[in-house]
Image 1 (cartoon, rainbow, N blue to C red):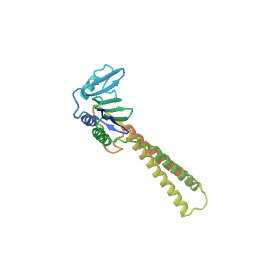
Image 2: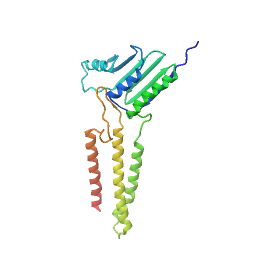
Image 3: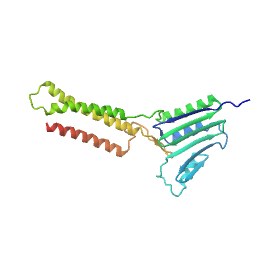
Image 4: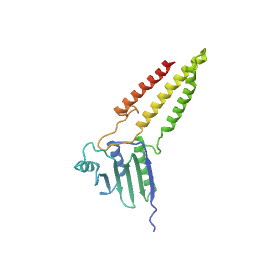
Length: 238
């Protein structure tokens, strides 16, 4: 009797925020019902290729390397369950992406495992497609440029002014302020959308602003003040 065909599913997740809690959940699902010795975790640090049965053992083995300190970042990690053609699961973290691979001769088990692992990664902010904030930034920038084209001639006009002239000037300032606010919002969302990978600690959760670094927050506040000062300076010229 011919062996059943092997069913395989592979999925890649972007923008994931994975820490120790998420890794423990993934390992629990991947290793559920696995035979002894078939589940492992591995990583590469410099020229060292490490593989252990548990995540704690891998962390200890990595920390024991003479050129590794507590500040050496984790750049990649693989969780694997290998029972040959019967059942195989791999969750690979590398270059900001998480790749899940599940194979077995049982389609129900294959799809079920892939779905459960995917749910954990989606809860960790993961998405099947890359979220690109650039198009929105371009649209906002174009809108601000059009506002300037209308606003500047009105501000430089030296003849008699009526209500519509002042309305145009006020509208132009409003559009620039709203556009600048939108640009800052998209920049903050883009920074907050960066993937995060931590092995020995949990990741921070909360609003997009709360997930920014202190340097990013200082940059946003500085850019806001600079933008307001620039608009005020232009208005003062006229």
